[in-house]
Length: 337
Image 1 (tube, rainbow, N blue to C red):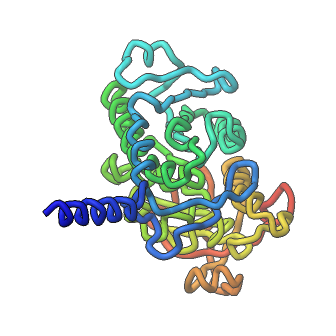
Image 2 (cartoon, rainbow, N blue to C red; image 1 turned 180 degrees about the horizontal axis):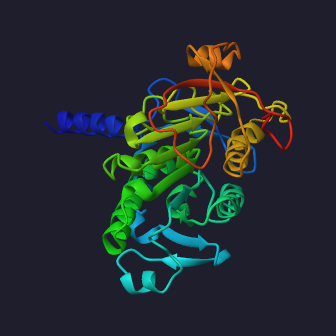
């Protein structure tokens, strides 16, 4: 009996030793475990898209209702923000927020924050183009981790929290979802979709700027066409840092959607070009397009169907659907007019 017990003990220890110390419990991509994702400085980071137990412990530490920060910019305070706190009606009343004006909500990407290029470019562009409220969402507590898989996982609860923020804002001020325009970049582009669907799909205008590709091809939480009344996607690094296939009511593939003129083969430059194209469009730049049969023909720049649809802009093109190709210049002004 002692010999049998000893053998079982040895066998049990061998089994325990063979078990992984940090087992995989979720696969963000079923096929490719390791992929390259782009950091804000343009460098590529090899990331693990199979989430382990340790990753979920990091996710659990992010509480977006507590950690997300909201910065209000208006023409009265174009460079120094005013904080907005969910549930603090008194603080809201002391800010420059004007419920009679449209509200633009900006959501940054991975490893970015309130002072990212995305916000530094788009806040002044919107305020120059129209007298609006601009709210910058800083979710760097969830998206600022070097662990990309964790940032992907945090994208969804952060978006749900932003939706609660919008619902509170509407309840307090009497505004409606039709007054909002959501704009997100990279991971933030998928997040604005999450926000929209959690506000009942009633947001009038949602723009996704080169939505992130790694971790989203088979992710059910990715941007969806009906997340808003009108949804538009601008692809500038499709299949590399950005999402390859169509996602919105309209999908634009400037210059084939992968490598942008003036960027060479630098994916970081191409990925970010979506921000600059869109900023120019809201300042009045005219990006004319051609309608495409599919995103494959758009990426081959072989679209020949006529189109009167312009990429980007301040106002939603409600009722418009399709895939479009656009040609741009190598440097500003990017629009060929």
